[in-house]
Length: 345
Image 1 (cartoon, rainbow, N blue to C red):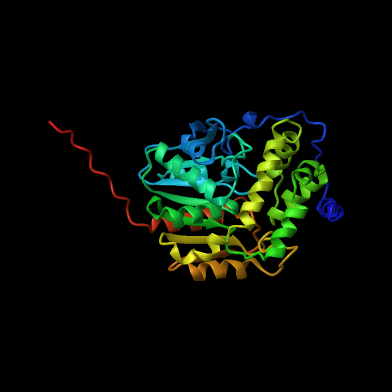
Image 2: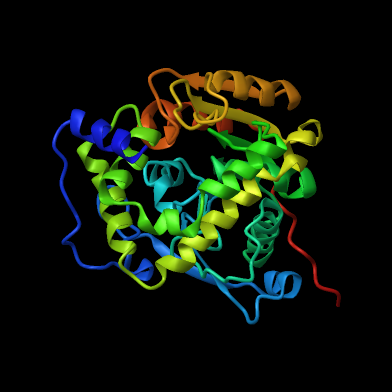
């Protein structure tokens, strides 16, 4: 498989090597707009997660916020193995349209803490999302989730429907069914050692080939950061979180079996040429088959497939993605403005 990935990269043209680049701490990653302007970063202590999951102490979740005065809040959830910067082509654009924009690094990823005691299941991550909303005094939000983040968003919408105003599911996980044997296959082939030992050409193939159909040189920061982060001690905790999250994704039949319970207005956007959904090693086929299944289960949902676009469709085809998502949000009813609470004499 690694040889195949190397051939993909070589046949696509010359690439830059970051093997000699210095280590990069997760905390030192630059969270900036496309133009290079830094985003306002925040931190939340997760008392609820500590109480529920016995994490051995309070842990910190990191996030960015833009346009805090926006009337409608849009919460962005990244996918497996990534971080909030994977929404780099959306955050400033949505803020400029008047939305209050919040993007989080889910526990185990990006600049957030990576506690070994946390189960990294979709239920656990959904509990964290709800705690974030409560700590930021957000009664309801539009939740936009990519891949794993889409499954977390679905979990929140099913378990806490009062918290979700609308959903934008972006190449979401959660629709594809895995048999008991297939779940065992994931356990055998996907380990922390596998994540940590992936050579640079494997990283190039995993990011460039698996996630994109319209790769651009401006995306090379994805590879550079991944190579440099792997040189730090914290990468072990990240690799463990990623493995546990994969286990959580494959064993989460609850979401697939409960899609009819989603009441929030839902948009599903995906790349017609997604190379990761359905799983290419176990199922094959086209992403549209999986997405149509999910759309058929969620009453009143809208399904949009973008041709020539890959799994990370919000970056691969950012302009049509943004147009579709913003049009969907523009059609939502105007959010109600809470009446100010009158104090008793």
